[in-house]
Length: 106
Image (cartoon, rainbow, N blue to C red; front, side, top):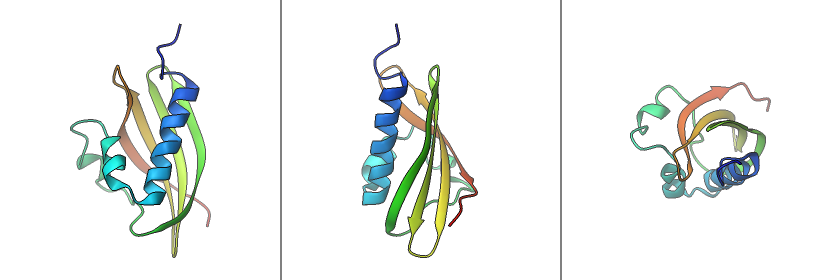
């Protein structure tokens, strides 16, 4: 039996909430989703939305054991940012510990 929250549905719910927080500009909640010790290094060399986000599309939310990957495209006024994040289940909740860009079409 899967641990509650580790399944696909549990991660997808967490990831969609995270993306919604990025769009809403709730950076405190966004940063609270990050694994302890991963900030600021997880952001090094990664382009993240800077300024108001008009919309976002979740392209993927996949679980593989106690690891997961989320992919979202954020649309800002003058740019599109594709972000792929790696997540780990820490025994009680999903936390993001990896971040990278991917090419997203405008």
